[in-house]
Length: 147
Image 1: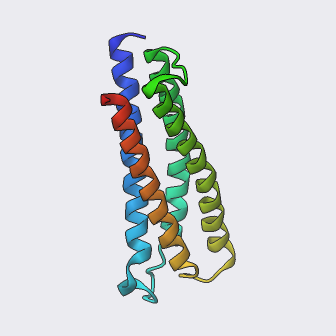
Image 2: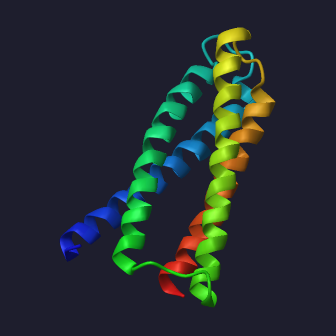
């Protein structure tokens, strides 16, 4: 992979993480804001549904660019400190993606079956957990990139 391609792959990966984390933090703030609860037109569930579409498209790009980053570094083995950290990160990513499926299903079901504002506390916790898990992934990525 050329240096320019490698830089582009890493750029897309970092921008994707910024978008996913920023969106989760924003959704968490919207659902946690007690001032807007019960206010007409303040139901953030449609915005959350839009975030879910953006989230999954971005996660697809992140998986592709993550594989591209690994390809640029060569096939790592599970032995050694770096390989152990990579294995831990991949396990956390797998758990994160599975948890995100659940969060997406909750958002879509609430939007379809319940009145505006229903499940606000559950969604605040879901997006807070999403943002926290992403911070753990960023920390693991930082350690992998810089030792």
